[in-house]
Image 1 (cartoon, rainbow, N blue to C red):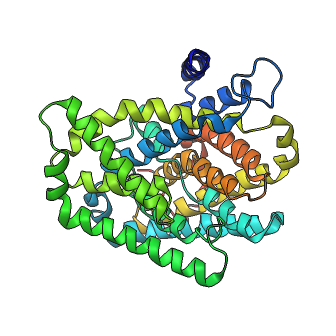
Image 2 (spheres, rainbow, N blue to C red):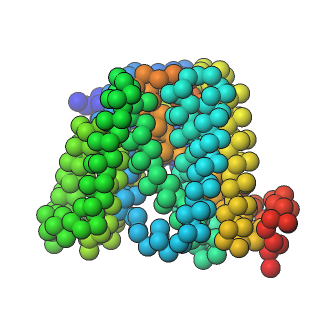
Image 3 (cartoon, rainbow, N blue to C red):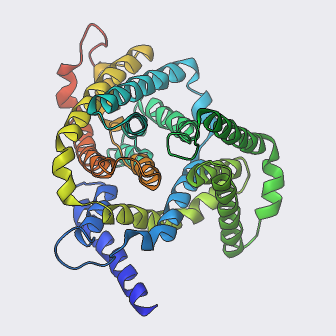
Length: 391
């Protein structure tokens, strides 16, 4: 027990210290947590904290659950409906271009059909954590394009739930097409049930978990999140998406703001461990074999982000500067890509997916905030005939 606590303490300290150094250079924390895991993992020279990354599997799962639960609590239906059809068209264009491009890349790499659908998910979903952090740190919350950006990532979060349900057969949880269809329908029914609870049953859930003291409220909402995540897992839905839906239910109660405040430190602490654990599983020696595909995917993502941003700006009658801000803010990839590749690894899919996702996420998570900071310098590359000049 003592040794386990020591190495766990070192893991947290190393992750935090490395992220603190990176913060001085404006780098996001997620790639640095992953880098900390790579440094002390079994696949790199030097001290090894964890010989077997699976030793952290349960604690890393807590990080995944708290991360998605927080996103669910933070979600607001108003964010989705206030943008109307223009937001739906913009988000639909973004998802179509990035998922479609990712799927074509996946088939072009030749790693397998299942792997192609995982690659599409990896390249198609932005990092809510990094995108939000970039907007806050660059003081762009009042910008005209910011509501659109937030609306797009909200729709992406919701789409992820359906995409993971659709990927159940791909991730090896079904032995035939019929089993896969049944599993998808069961997962979809469960998600629809939770959506109905979020819409009409929130008062009942509020009575169950309400408490005057923060201490009891924490115990109760953790129990609710874990229970829903566990039931989701048993029904063939990702436990992470179950946690997201549990958060969505609580978002409809008067407790939402308190729960959001109280779950934030749990999210930060355990999510750091999730990314650290992912880093432990990465063998830097494998990166060379996927460097070419990763670079191609990074370039394709940036080009598709620009194309989608031009379309979104045109739909919403925004100027070229707004289009540049949209493109480079939403280009960041992070937690969702690592969630997908973790599930793919558990399903025994191609081992190259893990190092591919690692380098893809690390590079985009670093350069996206840098490009967003300097987005004004790239305005001239956005065509005037499609979007107007800044006023």
